[in-house]
Length: 393
Ligand SMILES: Cc1cc2nc3c(=O)[nH]c(=O)nc-3n(C[C@H](O)[C@H](O)[C@H](O)COP(=O)(O)OP(=O)(O)OC[C@H]3O[C@@H](n4cnc5c(N)ncnc54)[C@H](O)[C@@H]3O)c2cc1C
Image (cartoon, rainbow, N blue to C red; front, side):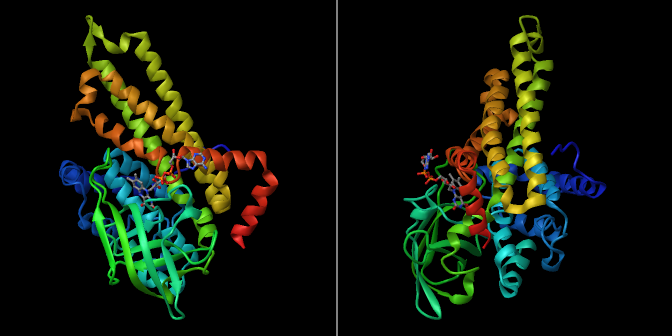
């Protein structure tokens, strides 16, 4: 599958209007949000008002009904703004919990959560990771005890993006032994719930990262997403968009860093000539260019396969996520090196880019977990197919 330019006139118009939005509503606030270590709810409202959250969601729920390439446009333009934390908050709202609610939710759940979230009136989060279990989703300990007409939820989550701002959290809970997990759409106004900001992060400063606590929270049965005890399979199959967007934003972050390096190589002089004349730096640039091109190719191929096959495209999506997040770190690191001491300063945006990109090999499934998924498919294809059938059932 060769993907060269997948964008139509409609995508190009979307890119134009979203780039204008970024320039007006995001760029002027970057320093303020980074310093305050949180963005404001207002930016969610404005994104929703303009329809930017809903580009790839159905018209029936307030979206534009466009394909996944429209989400690529949004991801690329957001990444160009050079504020990874804000981008993460916005896509942790849109591409973590909402695709699962769209795929599995009842009509009532979609009206109550999906519609206001796409309008930017409600902020959403995804709560899977716990202090004792992240990659090992089957090891989570937050429980939801079935009491007939409601669940009682107890436990804690950590590193949750949008955790203190969220109006609802798509929450992974234990409802039985082993892999018997379930997903609840948890309303954060529920008594017994509390959230604390986590500020001591390496990067992604403008995103709201939090630990969440649940103490005897009474949750109605109507909050259950899909079937009880199927949560583990839902998590494995319904969270591919998060990895696709991570690939898109990583690729763009690498591209933007390379462009900065290219410009600097033309302007900066050392030993009486532009540093772009030094072959060692030209070769660095060539390697960066190879990385950016291959990242974009694998990402676009993953998007194309996702449009065609949905979550069953998880092999190429895992490859894209692992490859682009690792390569983007390398490219940004080299771009910083090319800027010498100025690269280490905040002036060129590379210091922030390096801090922010470091998360991407960890979040949305670590590189090691991506390698686990890919190697399982490569070594045991039959088992992989059986697993997909089980997940879809
Ligand atoms: C800023 C930030 C925002 C986040 N946002 C969210 C969010 O919104 N929602 C959410 O639910 N989570 C979120 N996370 C959590 C993130 O998804 C987890 O940190 C990640 O999945 C890794 O889990 P862990 O931290 O428990 O590491 P661990 O799972 O403990 O892993 C530790 C190390 O062991 C390796 N490892 C683990 N298992 C294996 C294996 N089987 N084979 C080989 N190596 C393995 C890992 O790759 C890693 O290198 C966020 C994290 C951060 C830092």
